[in-house]
Length: 134
Image (cartoon, rainbow, N blue to C red):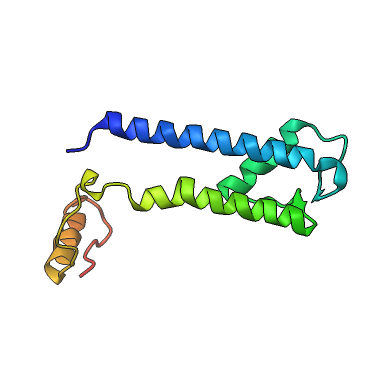
């Protein structure tokens, strides 16, 4: 059966990876701010702006107020997106499916639908509205 401690450990490990990657890429982006590699960042931008942009790219939001302009900056962001796949997306696909109790029979029959409709019709029998769907 599923152990909650394993889930919290898993989430905590992914959170540490996320923070580490965002900080590293934040430093890289911050280093390029003076060369106009990224639109929206300039020499007056602070480290928080670089962290913000790395975080937005990492999460996939991509608001667009900061974006790469040159080939080097595009390669930096491309590599961040690939790293995101290995930290967030790929582990979700390998998360143990036995942790979730799923019904083995995923088919729906007409009897299942009739049963749900009957439950709905019997839910509020005192209503003046005709609840007969079928």
